[in-house]
Amino acid sequence: MGRNFVLIFSLFISAILGLSSCNAQLLQTGKTERFTITENKEGKRVDISVDGKPFTSYIYPDVLMKPVLYPLRTSQGTLVTRGWPMDPRPGERVDHPHHVGLWFNYGDVNGLDFWNNSTDIPADKKSGFGTIKHRAVSKMTNGNNSAELEVTTDWQKPDGTNLLSEETKFIFSEAGTTRTIERITTLRALGEEVSFKDNKEGLLGIRLARELEHPSKKAEIFTDAAGKTTNVAKLNNEGVTGKYRSSEGKEGDDVWGTRGNWVNLNSNISGEPLSLVILDHPKNVGFPTYWHARGYGLFAANPLGQKEMSAGKDVLNFKLPAGQSVTFRYKVLIHSGSNLSDDQVKTEFNRFATRK
Image (cartoon, rainbow, N blue to C red; front, side):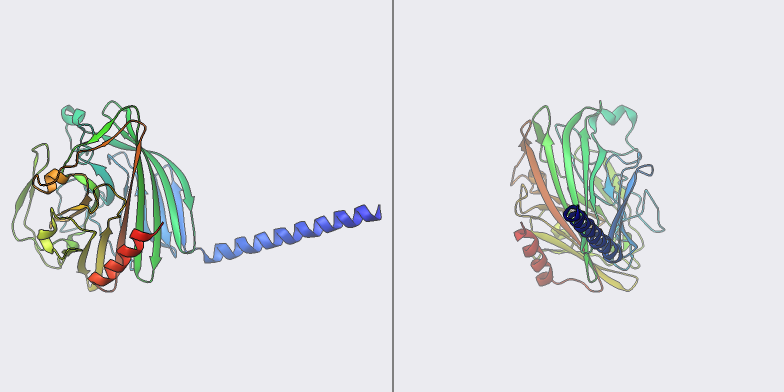
């Protein structure tokens, strides 16, 4: 009896101590976790914050034909993505309604255009467009140094059948005045081979705030792969200071249609110097990527559209056999307080490229 009592009492004390230790850890975690992710299923969004301040949101409203991260903010809260058509701001361009926030899709997937799809497409033209549907949030992980969001989406044909399944992990972090977003996306072909025919509309895109554009010198007309034209007007250039620079030393409009490990967009918004950078990864198909970077505010990496981006010098026409998968990795830097130098960006690229 006495021996059993001692054993039970010992187990009881151990349990109490274990619970106290666990509670202490939980309390400590609650105090120190900087990054939080909050899902709002009814609002069709997932909000990411750091130190209680908004970073970005993963949104998938019915008015968008794909999920996007929107908006993107610097550590000071400054918006670096265009507001229109979701939240229009004065002086913005109102072209290309499918350019929203930060997104990932392509202009020719088994003949379907996923890139240009929007609510502006007439019903009688919808048969030529694909839609990416959010299926589920798979995992959310808060943390002190970063937060991770994992989602599942379906690339659908106009009849609603699935062509590709997508698994994406986002890693959000902030060090000093630099915020970063890593996107690791795996696409799997389902019941048939999937062809990504060379097309200039792809793959990872950001639509920039007006201040980050290149100063507008003249009105321009741009034509997509289907021959549809879009007029882009010349606007007031006050406060517009953006300038691209690639890893190969190309600058401004000369970046478009060239390859590079990264592109750095330097600018200044209301006295806040900043840099917005996209880093490619050596394991990506088509590395180093071609850059679909336009002065009017489209900042995109396109490794798959090689024929269109190189005026026919290179051809890829990537194919994904049924049941097979391919993974793409990108990292976006949002740096506030200064314009990043080539050496600084190169250091970040080397760190990203060698990380396992």
